[in-house]
Image 1 (cartoon, rainbow, N blue to C red):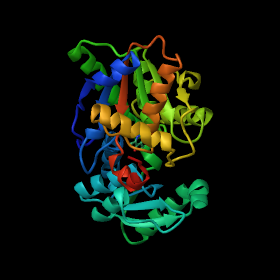
Image 2 (tube, rainbow, N blue to C red):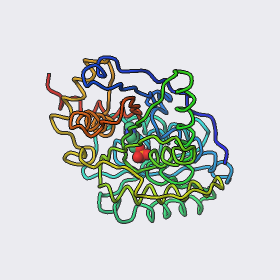
Image 3 (spheres, rainbow, N blue to C red):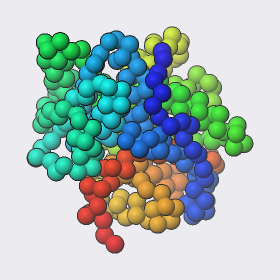
Length: 324
Ligand SMILES: *Cc1c(COP(=O)(O)O)cnc(C)c1O
């Protein structure tokens, strides 16, 4: 399966010197938050495949869904606009949202926005997107539906490529990462890393830090996405969800909700390394990684690679919750 070139790749990898010293492990970071500026973050690697598929199928409109501050929706509307496609976003809201952060950018990129309640989102987002697609068809257009987070077969291919990119960088930097850590919100990023780790017999420990739901939920999701992905590339691989390591201890008080400690962690790391994590995904995931190191659960890990999956625009709407 082919992709369109949209992201700035390869993303750079370097060691977080001060953090490494502080926790007594070598912690490296891969800057997938720098895949672009409008199209920044992990979603663009997935969209390189998804949008190619859409164009190959003759579609002129991209429909996708997410929370009001969805990085994925923002990246999708930006990428669609870059490619001359129309985007329609189904956004989950409980009260009328402030126009800020990613949502503000969605509007700047000219996305058509539809809203649904959290209940509708949970129970029938795919049906609602199908309905929007048939409205597009009745007006003579052709829509392509990208599921939540682009976590489906084509999307996961983007993170198979990312794992290959990591292996190449290991050779260039003359280092071997024994452990790879990323945030998990819908599972597509993890699925791609998992597939290539297994296919290439890389023997890395790949840890996904859940930011919502629980371990079992994501083991099932990753299994499904992985099956869909390997089918697309005619790869025979024994997908085993018991190998999918998802840590659900750092979800905190819920998706996109931040505790004081989480925000303080983000501020402390920014002051230590000039590295800005986001409150919804990477802040929780990195906080979890450091806690696991401190708890002694990563004794066999010496060289850890944390994938910074992006989310910067989602930090600004939380600005007033920080205490200095
Ligand atoms: C979507 C997202 C993730 C999670 O990736 P999934 O493939 O959905 O699990 C992590 N970090 C950021 C910043 C994201 O926007």
